[in-house]
Image (cartoon, rainbow over all chains, first blue to last red; front, side, top):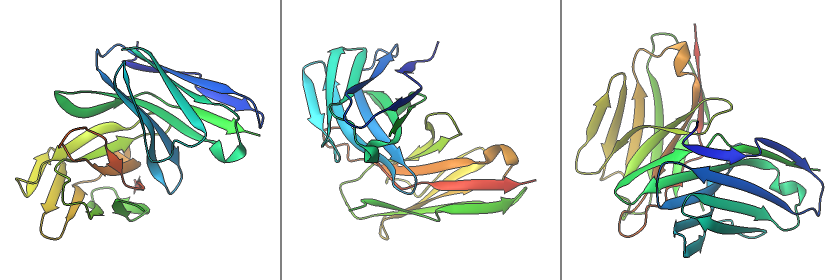
Length: 112
Length: 113
């Protein structure tokens, strides 16, 4: 099993719908992140959480919300999806003692 | 505003050649500079990383060169192989509190047989 699991892997949704992307990890890491990948723009940080009670906005948080349900689970929600949120979304984890990130395999989201 | 500028956007190298990807940054608080490798359908994976107390780090065919005064760092892939074809991201973070990584825009490398 993967260390960082993202579900679903692919999703097509309609404009205005609410959608949740889920991330779970077995690394035992305390820190979790949501990034968005767009061609030519690289990876941009949406939200990050350094423990269950800590949630912080990243550089592009507008239109998104998150929930840290447990140390191992971090969900990203699009309250009302719009087409320019079509992108590849990655969850990542890290440990306070080791700066390296572990990424999930990504969720490809298409908003039509 | 892109905090880490990466070039080129794409690169084609012949098998056995040297691939070079460059990154530049402005934030002098950055003190950790990793490179990530991403294959299609996969998440990025840490390839190699450097801290500014050294000017070069080598792991196998992969080398990071770091120029603190110029605020630039680069990835060199020696004897490039078709299996190295992937997207490469440079990144940076300031370990003064939290480990948020700021990524470059990525370089798509194709190594032709």
